[in-house]
Length: 432
Image 1 (tube, rainbow, N blue to C red):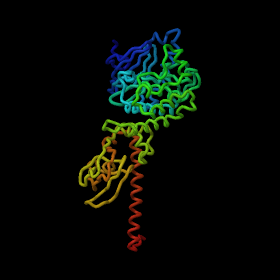
Image 2: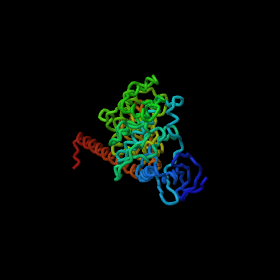
Image 3: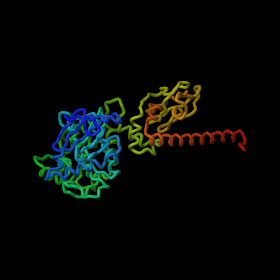
Image 4: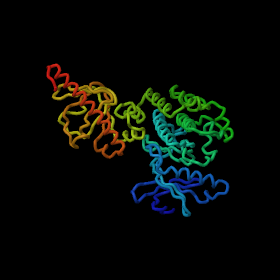
C-alpha cells in the first residue's frame, strides 16, 4: 500500500470501487484525520467513460470549501495533475446507512425520522447554495455515533455556478425522481423524491418500487404508486405514510415544494411518537431553538453549532436551577415551562419560555457569584450554555449571542426605567 499522497500520510485503505479508492490519512500540517478519494488514472483515461469520470471528479472538486454544514462532509482540498487526481475530505468515523436499510437491521422509527430530518436541513442548505445533489441514497449518507449524519459524494451534483451542460443519466436508478429518469430539468425537488425513497427504505427495508432491471425500475418510478410503508411495518403511524406519499409524488406540483415543509412535517410526526429515550432528540431541540426569539437571527447552520455547545435539562417543579451566592460559569435559556427569580426568598421576577437568565456569567467575570436564585415553578426544560464552550464557538455564533444579550439588556433597562418612573410618580417625585 502507498504510504503518502502529497503531504498526506496514509493510514489505511477504507474502500475501493471501479473508479477510485478511498484512504484514511493524516494531514500533518493541521494534525487531523482526513479521507482521500484517489481516482484511478485508467478510469479518467477510459475511452468510453473517461469524460464522464473526469466531469464527476471536477464537479466534486469544485465544491472544496464551498459547503460548510455540520451534516455535509467537508471537502478540504482537490488535486489534479500528471501524478495523481484526488479529493481530500472530512474523515467520518462511521458507516453508511446501507446496513440500516435492510429488513433485518432496521432502526427505530423515531431514529429514522431524526436522521432524515437532519438530511432535510443539510440538503436545504445545499439548495440555497445552488447545489442539487442528484444522487441521494443510503450509500451516500454516513452515520457516526448515535445520530450524527453526514451527506457525502457530491460528484453527481448540479450547481448553479456550472456553465457547462450537466451530464445526464447520473444517479442510482432506484432512487431517481421521475423527472430525473426522463432527463428533464431538475430542481431541489428531485432530491426530495430521492430522500423519500431513502425514508421508505429505512422504515421498511424495501424499495418503494420493485424491479428486476433498470428499465422496469424506470417504468415503475414513472407509472407505479408505492405501497404504504405501514403495509410492511404496521407500527408506522399514518402521518408518516402521508409524508412518504407526498415526497414520492410523480408530479412536482403535488410533491413537497420546499425542504422546510418536509422537515416541519417530520417534526410534527416525531412529536406524536412515544419516545422511549430519556434524552431530547436533536430534531426536537432544533425545532425549539428555531421558535425561540433569542435565536431569531441565527441561521440553521449556526443553530446546529448551538446544539453542539449546549446541554439540555428537564427539571420538576420547585427545583433550584441557580442558587443565590453560588459561583456560576453557565447561562440558561428556557425552552419550556416557567421559573421564578428570588433574592433573599423574595420574588423578583417570573421568566417563561424563551427568556434567559444567568447571562452575567458570560458577560461579566469568569467566576461570577450568582446574585439571585432561580427556581422552577412548573416542569421546565432549560438550555445550559457554559461560557467557556461559547468562547470556543465560531465568531458568527458569538456575534449573534452578543447581539441577543444586548437586546435583553436594553429591554430590561427599559422596564427598570418604566418601573422607577412609576414608583416616583406614585410618590409625586419629579425626575427633573
